[in-house]
Length: 381
Image (cartoon, rainbow, N blue to C red; front, side, top):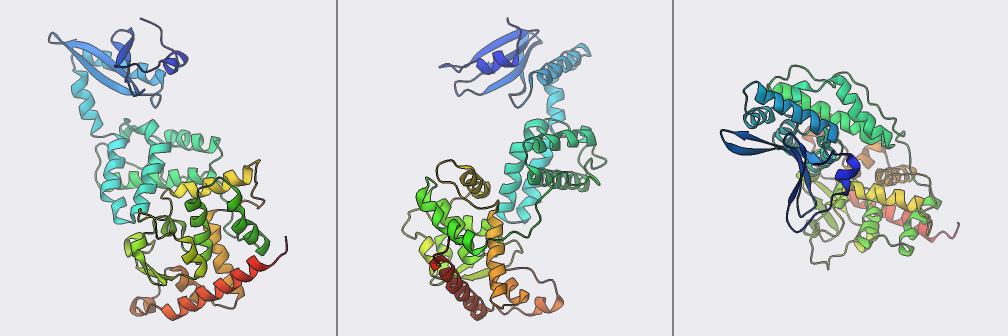
């Protein structure tokens, strides 16, 4: 038996078969051939050995695993069976609540919305709250959770985490989740400072952006996806999950399930857009399908030492704003641009007017094609 430390546990390597490292009093770490590690507590109940999982390492810290181990020992001292008690607790954990939220609420929105929530939870929430009873999470716990995200410089992500967790707790209150009596996120202000949403690319920046990718190791599909957003003005998620079956001649027909406003949307594909879609691929998805990958690609190219993208910081959504801005410069009204970008019009009239405005969309797409061509043909640096 050895005295565990984080350095010792991290150094344990997988073998051909699983093995256990014991510290004492039934507390041990199991190492699987895959490299997965987990804390366990083994005890004797009615003459039989019972192993019970405490938590995965390193998602669960050593000090937390020891504390949980001690709680299980105290359960036995009170005449309780830890296995029975843990099963009862799990029904009220935050992990169970989050799964219920994704199943019953998040699926009402777009599939990309559900996936985005799942990825956010997996990265920044569940590693710390997976097995914690939801009714025992306090405001201070939320602050610690958000500080972890802020400490790595992810201001906007911290705001997203708060919004997601707040919705999950509200969902739990509406569902009368066991023991849950209040939302610990109630009235908490977003902790991160986000950049103002007024960034768009200048003509020089558009030229640099468009011609940058041929000199890099970035996958063609990823570069084409970013350029497709600039060529059409669609949302990043609408481009990422595009399927070749949605293309009908010069038009892209996006179903309501993929749209932010849940309404089908038709996009006219100008020559730039059509050139970026590889319809010869055996896969029906011409572009990558990870939303965060586009932002990471831009950031890495701006920080590259080999062929640096010499442009001030911008996001994939800023490319969409760039299209809207130049259409405004070409004389189109905000209402017309909103139609092309599928912005929601909440007026009573809009509910009755179901015209699709295909002629107007085509006119604006071709006007942007002409302007984009002029920008790219301009020899200025």
